[in-house]
Length: 85
Image (cartoon, rainbow, N blue to C red):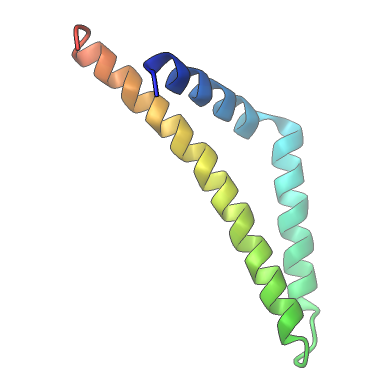
C-alpha cells in the first residue's frame, strides 16, 4: 500500500476514534453488554458466550483502528528519518 494511502487511512481511523458519537457508541455497547452479562443467570451459558464474543469483537475493532493509526505514524517517522527512501 502506498504511503499516501497509509497516511490517509491513518487520518480517517484517527478521526473515527476521536469522534464523540463513535466513542459514545462504544461506551454504550460495552456498558450494555456488561450489564447483560452480569445479570445473566447461571444456566444462560450460551448467552454469556455470545456476550463475551461481542465484547471481543468491539475490542478487535478498536485495535484495528489503532493499528491503522500506528502504521501511519510509523510511515511518517520513516519519511522524516529517511526522506529519500
